[in-house]
Image (cartoon, rainbow, N blue to C red; front, side, top):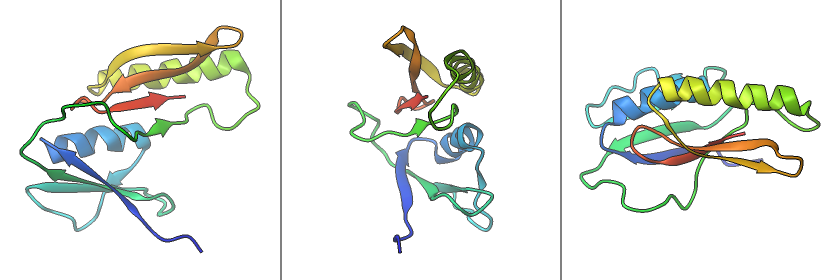
Length: 128
């Protein structure tokens, strides 16, 4: 049996960052978690891990050593045109929510593989 776990994240604005990631992942605020210097979001179905955000005084200074990949295209095998359309749509949604596009990455037949992005506090993640 797997061990339950939560992803912990440092943040300048924990509630703002939690709101962004709730949009990105389809999560909701954790019921009953009401802290001024922290926020937590959970999978509304109770399946995937919770993500906590705690206020820290220092800002981000280097590239993440670990990051989230948002897998909107599902599992292989893909219709590459539909996969690219899903990736671009999610990336656009996240830009509207405060993310920024860093670069697009293509492999093989030059179809879009993933988009590298940053969240509102500069943390890298990918949409694939």
